[in-house]
Length: 332
Image (cartoon, rainbow, N blue to C red; front, top):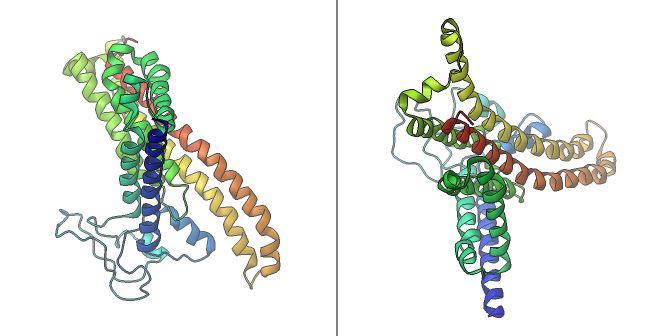
């Protein structure tokens, strides 16, 4: 039995590593190359989503995208990119990649979903039978911690049990995207504001939709305004509606800014090596001299980022729990 458990643990662990490795390979070999005006600009552009192309090393000519669907995007259709990727093209509003292209961050979103299925597949059986390998026990501990320390204390057992699958999915999905972004040649999906905005929108829909279902369509909007003089009701209503919209906006910016900021710090220290080693500045001697300090600080920041990756998943999930509970039961 122990040998069978070790085999399952080894196979699932190798499968999870294979998912991350394949994602990094695709991102490294099929992402469109970017070049900026200087080393810092070029490094920072690695934080931006890059389309997957068939020949990322092509210097001239039309880009051949890895996937182009024969779809037309209503009035927002953008022209195809015809020139090598550079910084000016990346920021110019009149030149954008087509909306039907696959981007490298989407690869890691899919990888995170697969990691959730692989790592959490044995948790239900473990909770029923208390039998499972070390990987299952670890993720079962995370799941029970989210349930007993985050969801139930805020929402109660009856209501919390209904929303628990969503909050578990949010936590592990964000955690895997954050951690996968630390691997070499990877892309951090949560460093893209549109992805964090999409997840925050699901929380907003549960806030408003759940509140209208539990309280009633009219009672939900009525209960937004506290008891106040009639003359102040219109102003307070506008303020409360803005407050409802600000909550998912805060979720969006908090996760995006923290993941982007950490990567920018690491890239800044790495960029110092190449910046100082440039012939027009101090030469390779200074670059080699600065390299140990810059690399050491970069490694330290990466270790901190591993903690931040889990911390940001916790914060996003905990705030979502509080926001949804407050919309369902405003009296609490």
